[in-house]
Each structure stands twice: as structure tokens, then as C-alpha cells.
Image 1 (cartoon, rainbow, N blue to C red):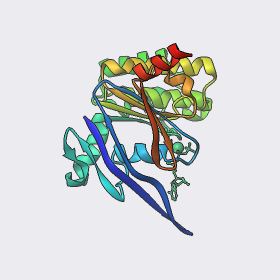
Image 2: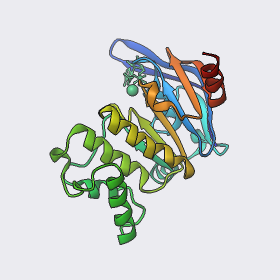
Image 3: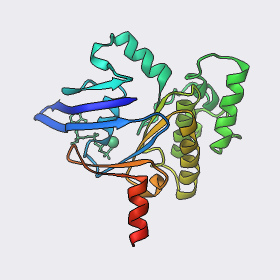
Image 4: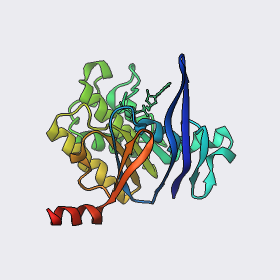
Length: 230
Ligand SMILES: Nc1ncnc2c1ncn2[C@@H]1O[C@H](COP(=O)(O)OP(=O)(O)OP(=O)(O)O)[C@@H](O)[C@H]1O
Ligand SMILES: [Mg+2]
């Protein structure tokens, strides 16, 4: 469904060129939960930016259902991100003058009562049922992160891109949030970047990155076989 082919991303900074990814290929199927692990700076966020079309690769191509991003007009790519993708970023980018519920509704396809009810239900599932009308500055970092997660889910995207979705949460809340994100697989795919392998226990595929390349890939069967051998 989503396929990155031979992806290379080179950033230019003040001092020169930084190679964030080189020659990486990865395919994601519908209803798959993919976990991406790797040390800080290995290119995890960069990979999400390319797969979601937020950045253009220096080399390589990304395809959604065999349609290459480079052949889509920018307007179509923007529309794709708005309707088919949901994002949970490392920084959550909530709108400060909107309440928690209003921030979630920004992503709703229609501003009707049914979606407002869905938004409330999602926030309640994420433990924020009592804080629907708080502004971001009245919420903790982890609470804001959960608002961003509800915002990424309300329009039922085909793919959710989540960058450290539990990074700001305590262990118990993190596991609850992952359970909700994981259940999303019935509707679409989930690509989650993390430093914490524990939250990827149920992933269909775990991809480990090192220095902008895939160091290893393990599907669920391989992991179970390894566990059994221990
Ligand atoms: N805008 C930028 N300009 C220059 N270099 C960048 C830029 N963004 C990222 N990099 C570099 O690209 C490499 C990959 O960065 P990336 O953010 O993808 O890593 P990451 O795996 O997400 O790290 P972390 O776990 O810390 O979030 C790093 O060496 C980083 O310093
Ligand atoms: Mg990152």
C-alpha cells in the first residue's frame, strides 16, 4: 500500500551535508502495525517525513497504491496528508487558543455533533474525559500528547504516523495509549517510532535503523520463534 524505494535524504546545514537516510526501502501493508526503533539521530523521524510526503527525498521515491509522490501536484499531496494520514509528532503542535476538544475537531472531516461525540469519546478513552475544555497551556505535556493522538485518529486516516507517541507518558499511561493506537489496525495502519521496544510487543514488523539504514527487520513470527528458543 505504502512503499518507500531506495530513500536517501541529505540535509544541508551550516557546516555541510548531513546524510539522514541512505538507500532505504520499506513497504507497509494495510492494517499493519510497524514499529521503528533505533538510537537518537539514526533517521527515524526523517523516515516518517518521507513516507508521509512532508519532505521530498534527495533520491528515491515513495508510492501510495503505486502512485509516486513525485508525480502528484503539491495540492494533491496536501490533501492526501489531510484526509488519509494522521500525525502524532515529537512536538505536538496544538493550537493554543483552542480547547482540547476543539484541537481534536480541527482534523474532523465535518464539524457536526456526531464527530464532536466521537472526539469526546476518543479523549475519554485517552483518560481526558474531564479535561475536554482545557486549553493546551492548562494541560501537562503527556496530556497534550494524548490530545494530539486523538486529533490523529478522529478522521479515520489510512495511516497514522506516530513519532514517540508515549515519550512523555508514564509507563502505565503509555501502555494504555498504545493499546488504543494498536486497536486502530482494524481501520488503518500504524507506523510508530520509539526508543522503547516494550510498546512494540504487538507490532507486526519491527524495523531497526542504524545510521540511516535498516539494520534488521523482525516480523511477529520471527520474534515468537526467538522467544520460544530462549
Ligand atoms: N533540519 C535538519 N538539518 C540538518 N540536519 C538534520 C535536520 N534534521 C535532522 N538532521 C540530522 O539528520 C539525522 C537524522 O535525524 P532524525 O531526526 O531523523 O533522527 P531520529 O532518529 O528521529 O532521532 P531522535 O530519536 O533523536 O528523534 C541526525 O544526524 C540529525 O542531526
Ligand atoms: Mg526523531
